[in-house]
Amino acid sequence: MNRSKPNLRILIRGANDIGSAVAHRLYTAGYSIVIHEVPQPTTTRRRMSFTDAIFDEHATLDGVNARLVKRLYLLRGELVAHRAIPIVVKDFHELMQSLRPQILVDARMRKHIRPESQRGQAEFTVGLGPNFIASENVVVAIETSWGDSLGQIIEHGATNPLQGEPREIEGHARDRYVYAPIGGTFHTLLDIGDHVSQGQKVARIDSTPLLTPITGVLRGLTRDNVPVTPKTKVIEVDPRTQDAQVFGIGERPTRIAEGVCTAVQNWEAHHVH
Image 1 (cartoon, rainbow, N blue to C red):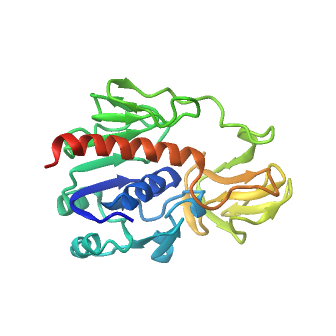
Image 2 (image 1 turned 45 degrees about the vertical axis):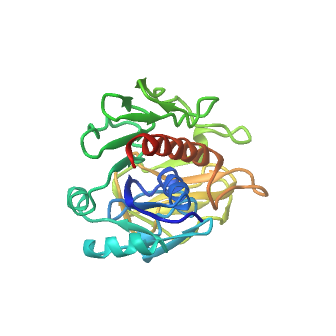
């Protein structure tokens, strides 16, 4: 692992699998990384991210640790020690004032929400996914859609619009997912990695049961006892019962993280002396 660069602070918005992969890549490159997330995220791919640190106070992803930091005055020491990636769930603006990051990466992947402008919140701002426009609401954007341009750094113009369907796995695309039919509190007794059969009751929202749409392995599952709103993605099934990828950093997050790391290194080379 490279030596820490404590004077260059990077704040990543979102502890999902994309944000976590970006944090992991930048942390192993030696940068001082902080992740900001909401107190009860509905993230499903929790074993492919640092999300569970928010609930359990610590999590490990491909050999890197993350730790929930409850008091902002402890952040500086955590960054200098460089033993784990701090995760903060306090007010975003309060965190910004305390940390004063030079670089801000919006990895929340809010596909259907037009993001507020990130420009001006840090010296260098990076937006991941649909609805980001380089040189307008961020300095640079990173392409997150599958294809040859995945992970590409965009310095002018928009990323690709939201694609219609998820990537197919063994003939299954949208039908791999379950979305909350109502708002309420999500409950489950199962865990990521469990094998499930089509039609099996996997979870419930309050008293409404949620059945698995296909046979396979649970790749994504919102944490038990977390409130959800209608249409929130809460369950994902990988149909590859033998070779399902439910742990660690996947191919798509890896390529996106590489794009972010290259963008950061390019900016650093021209702005940090």
